[in-house]
Length: 361
Image 1: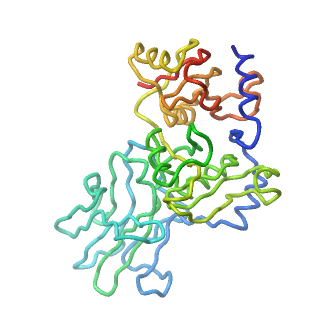
Image 2: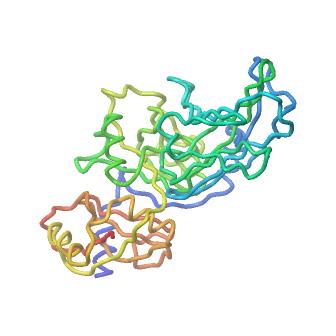
Image 3: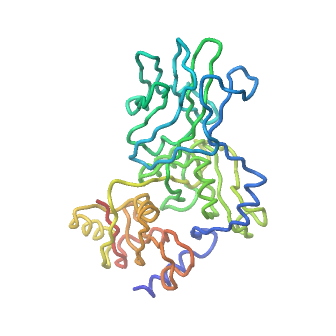
C-alpha cells in the first residue's frame, strides 16, 4: 500500500500544479522581510491628522504584542486608562480593510452603562478587571474575528485611541475546484473556503504562512479581493528568478476574473480519524457513518495536522471528493518529499476502490 501510494503521489504532483509542501528558508525570508515588510501590531495615534503623539489618558500598548487565540476561545483586547477623565466614553471598533464601508462599531460604554452593536456585539463584553480597565473581551472566537481593533476614548477635544491586532492562530491552505485550476470567482472562492471549514485568508495570514514555508505556484483570491501567491523557492515555472515573496496580481474583478482560493482555518471542536480500506467515495462515507461520524472536510484535516500533529501515511477520501493525507514526520516512503505537509492526490474517479477514509466527529 505504501509503495503504491508513493508511486501515485509522484505522478500526481508533477508539473505546474504540483502541491509543494511547507518548508522553511530563513535566509530568503530575512532578505524579503528586512526590505519589504514592516509589521506593526499595536500603534497609537491622534485624530487630528498630526501623526502619533504622546497619550495622556490611555496607556500605550506594547509594540509587536498581538493578542493571539484560536477559534472557539475567548480573547481580551487590552485598553487601560492612565487617567480617568470626569466625563468620557470608550468606543470599540473593528477596523475595515482599506477603510471601506461603514464603521464597524462593537461597543460604546461610559462609567454607567454600555451598548453593543453589529455582529460582534452579542459576543463582546467588558471584563472590568479594575477601575482603569476599558478592555474588550470577545467570546467564542470565529475565523473572521482576526484583524485590527481600535479602542477610542472620547473626551471632548482630547480624544485618543490605541489599536490592537487580534490574530487567530491557524493554517492557510490552497484550494482549487475539482474541475481544475482557476475556476473560482471571488464569491465562489468565498463559498468554497466556507464549505471546507475555512474562510478566505487575509494578506497577513498568507504572509505568515509564507514565513512558515508555504510555497504555492497558483494564484488565489484573498479576503480583500486581491490575488496573490507565495513563493519560497523561485523557479522558472513560477515567475522566473524573481526574489522569494508574496507575488501579487493586484485587485481583480470579483465577478469576472477566476482564480484558486487561499483558505484559512483554525482548531476545531471535533477530531479526525482514519478508517483503513479500499473504498469508493460512497463506501468511504458509509464507513465514517458506521464510526459515528462523517467524511472530514479539507479544513478539518489541515487543522488536525497543524494542531494535533496528525500523521497518517495513507491516502483517504474527504467530503469534497479529494484524496489527501497528512504527514507531520516526513519519511522516505510517505510522499517522497522531506517536509511536513498535507499531500494531495487531487480528485480521483469516485468509483476508484483504492483509498481509505478520513472521518470527522
